[in-house]
Picture 1 (cartoon, rainbow, N blue to C red):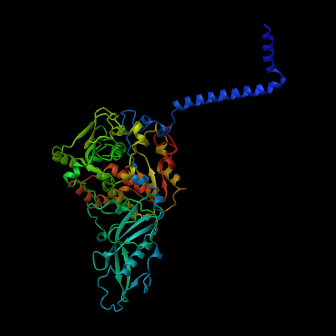
Picture 2: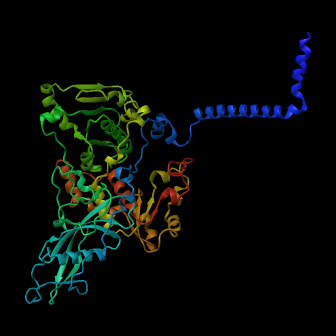
Picture 3: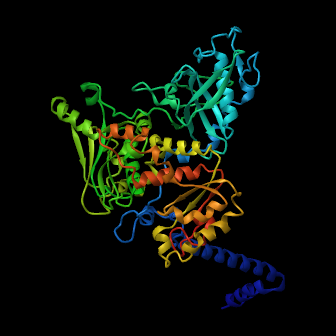
Length: 582
């Protein structure tokens, strides 16, 4: 009992005035720490449950939902052109390259008025003699004429001239890029030059032919030539390097206009086939879907093959979705090479055509005891297959969508391990050659506008303003501050009746895709090459090809006006779907 008063006195001592400040600080510290702990707990709960609007920050399942339709679990029907490898190459990757200008071309000693004088000053009776296209002075004359005529492109390589179609004609090739180029690609052109000789021995260039008019200067590639010949630092035969040596590592870039060698790769021997390791995807619901769906799945298969260090066995026969066909139905039998650059793919990755593969397999698998490892569950990850020693891994997909889509293999934990090698797939260089031809006919000096109409303009619930915002009157108003009067204006559009845009002709020189049908008609180079590729059967210039060419010509305009960025308040994917990229 005597101890209690003393205890109370000791406790009450903490409330003495000299102890109040210390106690207050302790209470404030405890309170702040409590608030901090509660805040961390609340933030953790929010972070674990919040799903942001940007689908790129969602987990794999959310990305799948974003890319697929709500109605049938497939990719959204989309008639736009998918981006491929060359679209991801930065334009500045070629900044170190020096282009050729007039100062780099030697001026002949006796040059007068832009011509060259031959060494033999006695020209009497020789005015009609053949022009020596191999003469270095003639070479420099042709280079100067090309640089002076085509002022909107940069020249990077000139090929040595060769004799043309007659004694007064020379053909010469060159590599170039447009000055206002926004794509990391090089182009090849070869033209016919008409050269005249005057009585005082002076040679002059009278005229330069149209795009690809100098066929004799076109160099054919040898079979099985390495893909590195498309690297800027390695030249085709017949090309002369007239610029100083450039620094830096060569960068592989598409070269549009080269002869295409997209023949199918073959296995050279039984031993090489038996020693190989292969991967094939079989079945599934990816056929006849949109091109974006097809590529998304195909790139997953190609990525897994590279991860497993195996050769991908691919089906070059594509089913083209009805959204791209004139018949309105899905069309089987389209060749991968119609749309994509198979030469670049086979030079850059290990791939085989499945028809050839199964022929070799039937011939040798029993003799060499080649084994097959069957995988029927897409949830078996590539990481679990890395130790498989069988010759062939076959992923077999069922009939239930969407679990039978190839891209499901690359979801979940796999998406951080297996990367889609987008840099391996480029657009068809045959189609890009048509793009280059159209741009060349416009002298690479034009502006472009993309006008989306069609079903979207008729659907006022999703796009309430689009029809009015893309009317001729609205276009004239929108373009007046963006495009100068009198300019060449390329109109990329899905509007079938181009007379709809006739009011724009008062201010601009308008151009449309259909004006260049000769580039893919029965007399065209594209028609001949695709027919040969298709076993002698003509190939239709289908809706995806048209959209691809139309879009690529648009992207090469000096000024580009987009529908959903510049012409209308509506969103690209419908009402209330606008993002910074719309």
